[in-house]
Length: 297
Image (cartoon, rainbow, N blue to C red; front, side, top):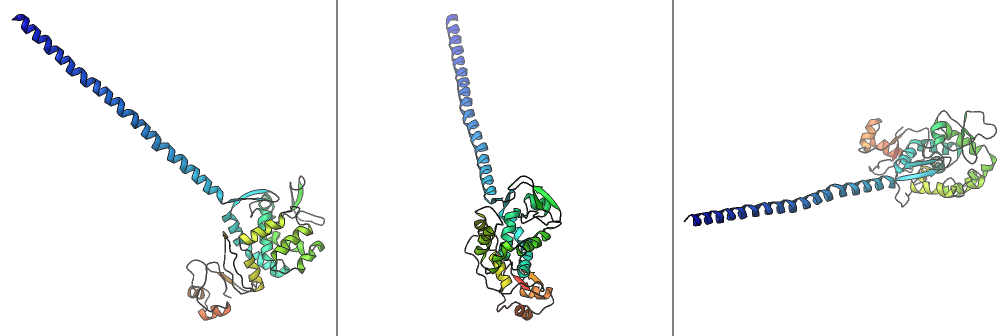
């Protein structure tokens, strides 16, 4: 009897050991299997999208930049060039009327020679046309590397003085006299004539000027001074304003149409009747466009 009881105890003990070992093995196997996929999933989701986003942003930001090389190498965006045109277009049109130089040529030269106002000479000397000292210059000057090391360039107190000196520079030298026999709206002939007269040594100088004029619709300012209607270029200009058939006159006061303006709001601002405003600007309808220049006085 004692032997039977002892045998039963042994069998129960063995059965109990087998029952506890199996769950332990299953538990380890399950833990090992679930950890690996979890780690891999986190690594893929966290890092790859971040890298792609950064690369895309960098490409888009640099696509609108442009390198302008003249007296210095300047990197500017299309917006910078657009702002430069808006800032100096009135001076260019005024100089066209006073000196006979196309406003489109003045602006294109200024963009190129000054790096749209960001170049070294424009920043340090307000020199927007790369004009060197030359014989007879008695004003201030700065030294700057160009065709030769440390050449003498003119320095001005303000950018406006540079624009005026550019006009007197062209009109006061006989080598540029042939330019003034050209049509004022023939910017291509003027661009080529400047290179031929020796304004620049770069053989691509005319092409660069023409490119700026056509890309930024600078011919519209010639049309405004001449009183001609202007047909915008069929291109992807980054800046475009709408010209009118009214010739620019420095004796008039102009209003540039802004977003939200109407003929009524403009007439009230300048104490005019809408009918008078339309008559001054040869308008047959009440439609106006942002950037359009209207005579108000």
